Image (tube, rainbow, N blue to C red):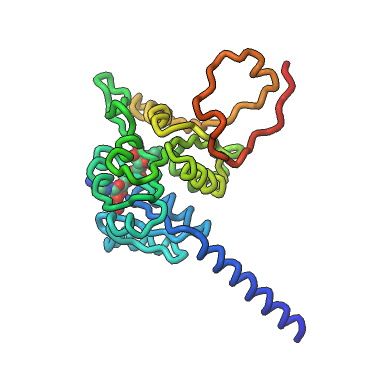
Length: 270
Ligand SMILES: NC(=O)c1ccc[n+]([C@@H]2O[C@H](COP(=O)([O-])OP(=O)(O)OC[C@H]3O[C@@H](n4cnc5c(N)ncnc54)[C@H](OP(=O)(O)O)[C@@H]3O)[C@@H](O)[C@H]2O)c1
């Protein structure tokens, strides 16, 4: 009898703790239910976030199936309604569709908007190049000046979100934003995903991140029979690397975002 009562108390405690943890978590709107959107949605729901998909066809069989697969109270609605309900908004949408989608989200002032997209097209020689003079993230920020746009999570494939164990150790994810608190919030989310967030500076550094993303496309356009998955990784922390102080520090060097630090101990110089 005592064992039963203790067991019941334990189950109640675990249930309450899980409920409180889930209730504490923000709602994440995933606008776009394609390859990346369905990976993000299922991953965040499994981490205890409430996921709302924003789709052009929220009532289609395909989206209903995704919602069922996602579970954990996930739902689907229009893109605008999902953006209204989400505390954090993900935009896994391709270009040029992003242009109309990101300008029609409604009032998203104060919300964090994560852009993993890649605004690419093929050049005359068939190789990928950016469609923009700046970056997707900067365009989204320009269209939604009250939002806190963060560039992140497009430097690896959706397969890695689904199967993070296929590579040896956590993959490093560069994050760029002009909003320090938003960068720190998304860094914690990335950490929860088992990945390694690093501060890549202001939003304009999205141009460099988007250029990195294009590496994937090259073998496809070369029509190679094999593809490559590159992953961005931290260097070893060589103890000797700062002996030559060759660079000028960034202007906010004393005020950088606080990131979960997965750097291993320094390696002695060779
Ligand atoms: N797939 C990857 O592994 C990967 C990796 C890194 C970066 N990315 C980038 O992430 C973005 C999304 O990639 P993806 O592979 O998920 O693309 P995708 O499979 O084509 O999905 C994009 C989704 O955007 C929505 N959409 C399409 N046209 C739209 C329009 N005109 N207006 C509004 N919404 C529209 C659709 O969702 P609904 O049908 O629900 O409306 C669609 O499923 C791209 O920029 C891509 O370059 C992808």
